[in-house]
Each structure stands twice: as structure tokens, then as C-alpha cells.
Image (cartoon, rainbow, N blue to C red; front, side):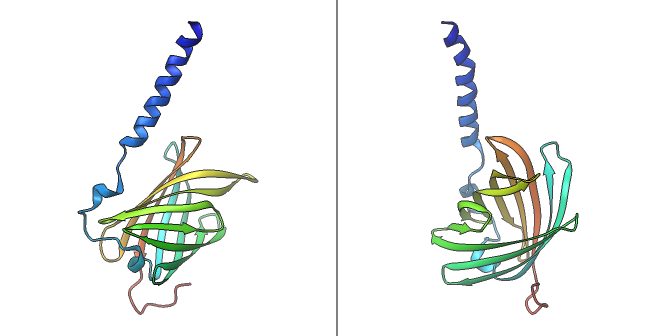
Length: 187
């Protein structure tokens, strides 16, 4: 009986965590929102983004700028990202993207574990994937729940929640801006 009493709170916490995961927004909640975010057209050509990483307490840990070039041929695309961080370090990530039909997408990059899967509806897009993130000489596999919202013809807001073992690590917030047609080279 004593073991059963100890297991009841654990079972209740597990159930509460499972139910709270279902309670969040779904991409279909935004199906009527405009302007529509079609990744194949928005991620075509030159873009840039400004962003920051905040820890779980909300403190800004790092700021960054990203220059990107997207290219699509039919259902296959690439997004070549070049990051410059506030501490002077740089990073490149090359996404290989695929439109799966009906607003669904998949993606792969060298620092993405397995495959990123996403869905689009209305002005929203949601990616979920695991990122191999270098931290203090070790590599952590962190889960990202990545939401993008198209605000107007040139602007997309992006917020990613990072977690490990279900614990909130921090957030990444970005503002994407699509370069004007005919602007200078992407990089």
C-alpha cells in the first residue's frame, strides 16, 4: 500500500504533463489567418533575420543576424543560412527541404538529428525537430518546437521553444525580412 501511495503522485504528474502537451495550439487553428505563408514562395531568394536566444529565466544570452538564400525547384528546396553571433562567432546551416503535399514539409540539415517535420495552415508554419547543439564542449540533443507567422508580404515572426527531457531550456525569437526583388547578392 505504501508503494501505491508513492506512485499515485507520479502517475498524476505524468498524466498532467501528457494532457498539457495536447492542450497547446495546433497549426490548423490559424487556417483562416492571412497573409498565407507558403514556404516555397517566401523562402525563395534572399532573406535576412535578426534574432536572440533567451534562457528559461528570460535573460538574453546571445543575439544574432542571419543572411539566407532560399531556392526551390518543384517540391525540393534548400535554405542556406549564415549566422553571425554577438560574440563574433559564425555558423552555417544548409537545410534540404521537401514539400510533401497538403501543407506538410520535411527538412534535414547536418546539425538536425533525423528529420524535421512541419505543417502549414493560413499564416502559420510549425516545425518540430531535434537539434545537435554544442554546449561547453559537449553536444546536447535538444527538442525544438518552432512556430513561424507571416505578418505581411516581407515579414515573418519566428519563435522556437527549446527543451530537453521535457524541461524548458529557453527560446529563440527571430524576425525574418524578405529582401526586395532586385536587391544585392544574398551573402
